[in-house]
Length: 400
Image 1 (cartoon, rainbow, N blue to C red):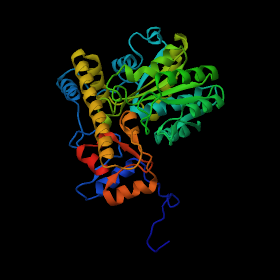
Image 2: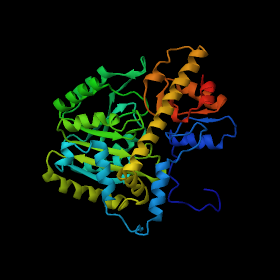
Image 3: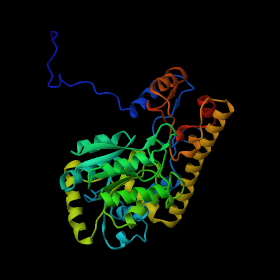
Image 4: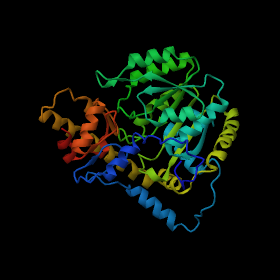
């Protein structure tokens, strides 16, 4: 130790690697090239590459600010009750039998990440089946860490087929067939991240069949409802299919993408139970998970979401804005495909049109991604995922 240097309790701590997604965004910020393009972070951008605050969010927020009855008191541990009810109805549908029978417990949580963490912590303590969490390969980078931090053993099932840049349905079904009976299986409700590849309705039925026979416990991650196709009900198809089959399941919801409430950290965790008698006990134990974790959730973002979901005029306008965002991304998919074909870039690029939602899984190798970043100032994750929400007309020409 050099003279004068004071010893620290943390001398042994190693430098952690940068986050594979947020680290790219940080590198983008320090790049001084005026033509740089950020296709790494999953956040919507306008055609000018600017962040978007939805009109309905501004209206709801203004109404909340102008309401003299609004205060900054602590929320209950389970969060905003109206928000929880409306989130439950949005995800499962107002006519859902499980909702009507009082078999769905919903608590407010910290966006999708917090909802997943609350769910996994609950499973780690209370699930009597195998504490094994199967996640698709590939999946969102945080899924494995969240499961492992909660004490779950994380395994993978096949999902993406590089040769076709589509779904490996046979591999998926085979891996779920081989899974331990009663294991937990994480499913992306729609707009799979990072691939943008979703099962068809027929394939969802096949997956449900295996889940039922193997008594697997589905844990749905719904981060893009309404954002993927522009239709809130269409994007809830898989979740509602499984719920209406009468099986128990878990759900993590996020309003980061579909309401653009990224920084507000607005989400919900729901547990669909086999009978209503257990729901109060499940809720009580969810409180026991939340209380030492963050005590209770923040109020502002959930109040905005509840105002939009619970006000017919705002809800109608929100659906229109969702369609506009979804359709712009579809237009960018078409524009990128057209540019690649026009420039005769080698390869079959139809997958750009066939994938859905915010991301496209290009199949680019790490060295190719590094060249794009180093020489062309196009920032993307090193697995070849690009955010279609960050693409504009000029960007399509550069990418091709």
